[in-house]
Length: 190
Image (cartoon, rainbow, N blue to C red; front, side, top):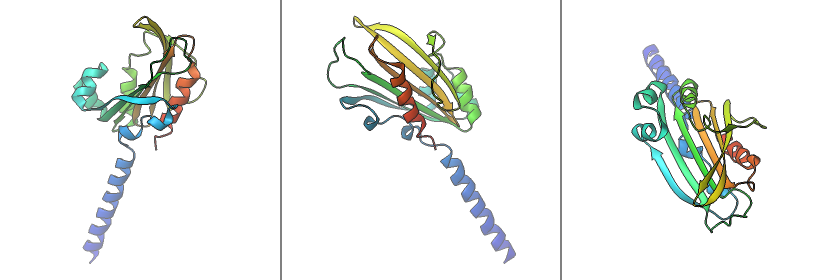
């Protein structure tokens, strides 16, 4: 009888540990921004579930690095205004939202150290706390004769590596809009 009780106790503990481990590694799809988080007039452009091979080929890192860091999964979604946006329009007209999870916070941090988005752009001061470690930068690019201002928020939170990019017409989009969206996404991390 004592062995039966010990066996059942062991199974119960293992079940709790397994449930706890799964709870700390949420599905990246549940972390990214949702359409309801954005102002009206936005629509989904693309979505991608990343395998480890896809994450490596699109993320500037190798499969071996991702395996070493304990890569679990990644998901991205792109949103854009449904209607054509004039060059004089204010506010964000495009948003990129990305999340990837790792088996530990160290893995997410290692991935963040390899992030290249802010390496070649203007670093900005962070006016609010987002996640555990955050990079915030901006860049100006020209797309189809339109000058676009993009704000990049890249951070880790527990075992997740996340990114939000918000962009709009140069001089007509504010850094605070990108930070507000990143805070919404960061709040989804359990």
